[in-house]
Image (tube, rainbow, N blue to C red; front, side):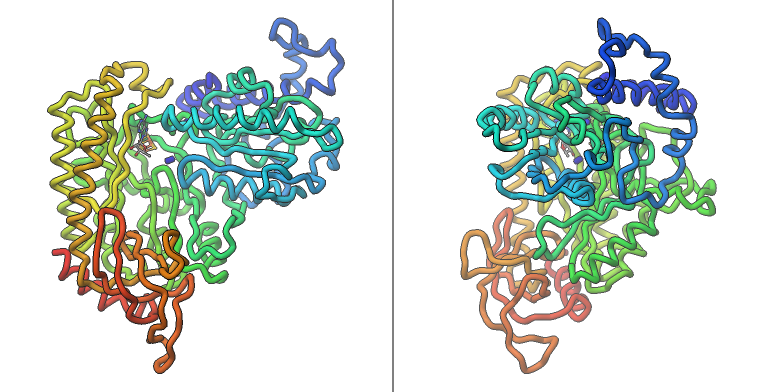
Amino acid sequence: MQPLQHVLRARGSLRRGPLASVSRLRLQNCKAHSRLSDAARPSLERQQNGVPKDFSSRLMNGPTFQHFLRSMSPPQEKPSFPEAEDPPPYLTVDKLLGRQRKVYLETYGCQMNVNDTEIAWSILQKSGYLRTNNLQEADVILLVTCSIREKAEQTIWNRLHQLKTLKTKRPRSRVPLRIGILGCMAERLKEEILNREKMVDLLAGPDAYRDLPRLLAVAESGQQAANVLLSLDETYADVMPVQMNPSATSAFVSIMRGCDNMCSYCIVPFTRGRERSRPVASILEEVKKLSDQGLKEVTLLGQNVNSFRDNSEVQFNNAVPTNLSRGFTTNYKTKQGGLRFSYLLDHVSRVDPEMRIRFTSPHPKDFPDEVLQLIHERDNICKQIHLPAQSGSSRILEAMRRGYSREAYVELIHHIRESIPGVSLSSDFIAGFCGETEEDHLQTVSLLREVKYNIGFLFAYSMRQKTRAYHRLQDDVPEVVKLRRLEELITVFREEATKANKAFVGCTQLVLVEGLSKRSSTDLCGRNDGNLKVIFPDIEMEDATNPGLTVRAQPGDYVLVKVTSASSQTLKGHVLCKTTLKDSSTYCSTERIATLS
Ligand code: 5AD
Ligand code: SF4
């Protein structure tokens, strides 16, 4: 998943309602303009003591009220050329084009960042940039960054030090190398990055990728350029992400951005802004395109994927109250109306019955019965649910402002297991949150033992500035204790996952083949319905879709694999035959239920 004084300002303004936000955002825009336009302005117009001399005249010349009315209306078809702002007069159309400059993109952090990289690249490609995978060849290096934990940011600072050498050693015969920071770290640290690392030429926050051609054009002129404006409605609905791996069998489709939950430890609402959903029609269009390209799996992506709510169609904006999971509450005023996640999931899964549908990352509060029922009924929706618990202690869950107690969470787990027999469960946990005692920690251990997750993501708590925990709580668990508790959680998780995964031994699994196993060129690798990795020898097998034929499995094929061994992370087995999702579903689900119940 999934985080500047500017951000705080933006957040404050959003709370105050549209008119206040207009004037605030207008100031921010002006600030961006002032940075970008300096090169072109006579020196008299430049800042004195940090205050633009003709600030009021520039405010007059800034974006109009109409501009903001447009940016606050529901997303519409946008022109392929980025229209974030009119370019300043000194940036001619020619300068906004990439002119075959080569861009090297490097992605850090979560799946959302992988998707953002594809969006950024799609925008730059349309502007005439070329892509390179060779760092030495690059004219522009863009790092798509993550701020969720301190360590993630440290990795980027280290990388910037390495890139500095590349920039300083660049021969004068080549165009100067430009380096940009995109995503959460740009949003969180803004000017701090530009001041600390003078070699950084541009910053673009998660909602500013349409502005990249302009930012790069400004950077070309030797100025630092930044746009870290957060948006209320940007979902990049009209930007078709460009898949980095043309032979991939699966793709991620972004369905919503931002988060309104404000869990007390989390920087995401500050770096990615308010929650907003992409219109259903544009999601369905993208899924259809991916299915036409032969992709076999789509993962719906968002910080809070199951709080999806498309309000773009007026007729659905009635006062239908939101159903939450039983015993769960929200940190915000309950929202109403719009097309909800179950509607989207239903329609996405109907696009192509041979296409597997997954979604990540959900919040446990948004699992009403209609979603669970749909997952149970629909063959191509994977019976796999990520249910981030974060802690097993109700006291810590309250401090984290998660909106549920341990008891409500466990009850939800039972309800999910009853509603979707054989469901595979995964979770996120944080070790050593503020005020966590040994007793709280043991409760997390006991939750891991009780639930027996198949897949787990475990982290040591990392205090992030601007979060509620930063302002109100003490980061009082010593680092060594956090790490020791994390180790204990990992050990217990592995033991329980091994037990849970061993239940698959002797069972037949429907596997979507991804390609060669990384560890052995004679083995293939794919994933079962529960998203566990399955390894099996690459041998000839019967093709049940073409009786009498034998074939070797190819990426994108569905095959049946008989599981012979299991660890905490992988299943191993031998391949039985090539099949289809539809033909195998009855057989596999009966067996899954029999094995796991
Ligand atoms: N420290 C440690 N882990 C965190 N996460 C989010 N914020 C923090 C933090 N400050 C974890 C949560 C979340 C996952 C994406 O990252 O477990 O679910
Ligand atoms: Fe962060 Fe909580 Fe939102 Fe997840 S739900 S992105 S943990 S604030």
